[in-house]
Image (cartoon, rainbow, N blue to C red; front, side, top):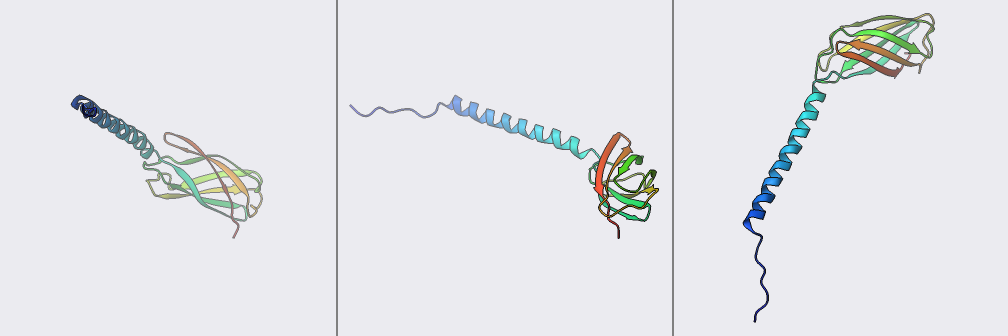
Length: 137
């Protein structure tokens, strides 16, 4: 008598494994597409620079997202120096992806180097709160 021989993997098992691999790859691709497409269709704002000369504070807001941010406006601001703050405007008020806007705030006192500020910006579709530090040249 010879040694026991085991057969190979039945063809139906091979087909089922191949089908499940294709279905799993399809689900992963759908998940990645769904999550990245919604993230790319959103404006994302960040402060790229802030400087103050006397009582005037200017900061640059850049749209690093994949959608246009329109009707950009300052709604609130607090800073550790500068006294009472008067909100100015952001110019331009519409930011395409990759574009920047300069916003202005005026204080009743001088801004100090390293001042921490928090601003609330409104845009079509929502509000964003951004924080930054001020440089005094």
